[in-house]
Length: 124
Image 1 (cartoon, rainbow, N blue to C red):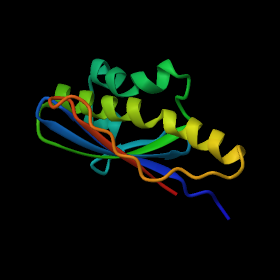
Image 2 (image 1 turned 90 degrees about the horizontal axis):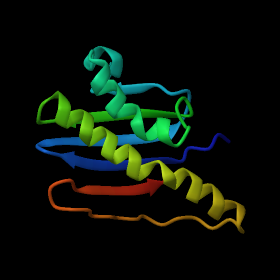
Image 3 (image 1 turned 120 degrees about the vertical axis):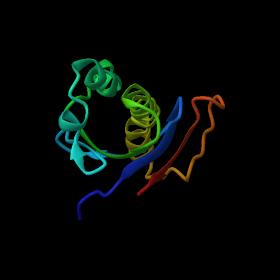
C-alpha cells in the first residue's frame, strides 16, 4: 500500500493566508488550481516560494497543493514560503520516528507570532 502521509499547514503573512498540503512527489506546486509559474510570473516571487526547498536541498522531492487568499502577490508568496519552511522538516522527523520502533506522530499544533502565524498538523 502506498504511503499517504502528508503535512498540512496554515500560514499567514501580512494579510495573505495560505493553506499548504505538502506530500512526497516530483516537485509540482499548484496554487488555487493553477501551476505556480502561471500565477506568479515574476522570478522574485517564485524564488520566495521555492526558497525553503532550495535551502534544504529538497527541490523536486515534494508536491505542494496550496489555497491562498487575501493580500497581494508578495504577501501570498511570503505566506506560502513561511508555511512550507515550517512544515517541511516534519517529513524527516516522521521518518526518524517510524524507523525508531514504529512510533507515529500525533496531531501537532504550533502558533508563532501573531502577525506571521502558523498552524500545522500531520495526517497519515
